[in-house]
Length: 463
Ligand SMILES: [Zn+2]
Image 1 (cartoon, rainbow, N blue to C red):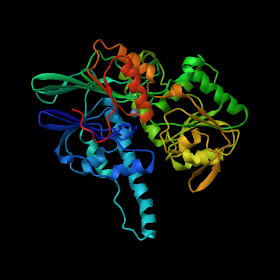
Image 2 (image 1 turned 120 degrees about the vertical axis):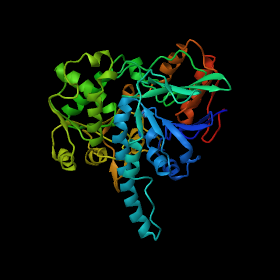
Image 3 (image 1 turned 180 degrees about the vertical axis):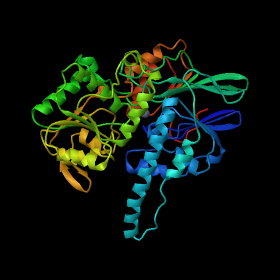
Image 4 (image 1 turned 45 degrees about the vertical axis):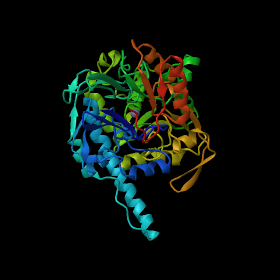
């Protein structure tokens, strides 16, 4: 009996989690956190729709929190199985989970102060550092393109998904009543031809496909229309901001976006076309993630692996680890580039930089990644006149930019092309990991090329 239950990232982009039941075993594909609006974040505190003790193992597509963030909660509720993932994911996961546990503990401390004042009972954090550490001890790294047998009826292999370093598509091979079924979870699919990492793996066939649809209704336009590279667009914004004496703030995800931006700036510095200003990476998480990039050169693309020098070191690049160093940046008056987390501005040091600079018209804010509904980043991007943050109202006078081409997700044309290159069409494509509009749009496009498609809901059993 084969059964797959959708437990998250259905008609939304966060909380990725699928429960697979096969050959009397239960296992999970991802165990992600719900992020964004309060009503979604609340879901993280609900009981799992399964018994964590019965889950025998977990296969992880990549280290992003919306795919991995509830693993420590799974451990808290009794999970003791193996966590299979690629080697770079296995090195990123400890950084991500410990950071997440820290955030949970801090948030709960603040929340409990509020509850106390309201005469309410204090609440336990979602999980704590010890749960993250127990989870880390369960990691087993497996290389891409190796078939890993679980037993005689279940095996899997990982393929490079080109989304962030170590990101994987998961190919499950399950014998169900002596019939072999091949089920592919695309994970998050990256864009083609981006720096450092390789292109997404070209799958040739599968029986059933779970495909992401973050940009199921969009094209990364400027690549198509203006024939400008994303580096040229970024350079133009930074130059103009520098000329008018402003700072360029880049809210950035710690993994991949930050390193790709550094890689691009490094190239421009070497070419002598980048302004002579400081570039700050003001994110302890991004600094630690950069170390993982330096280590895993085996997954680099051709260009990056042929580099003689470390692409993450150049003149004027400053990594600020401590809070004091971070605050010092705001004392400086000269133009600079500040790359800081979080990518959607809902936490992290970027909020301090926004507070200091968002109201100045000489500032630029450059979004380089997806901004989920309900996040501060989304409000700023949708041109809010003022935003409420850190207990105050702040006028948005800065220039707001979005460079879609920096996205770590394929747009629909790339996903459709990837599907067209299959030698055999899947019997069915389940469209997940996209807000309703995007999922619906990708549904139509996939149906147009003759593939039977379906958009599942959370809690739905699919086989
Ligand atoms: Zn991701």
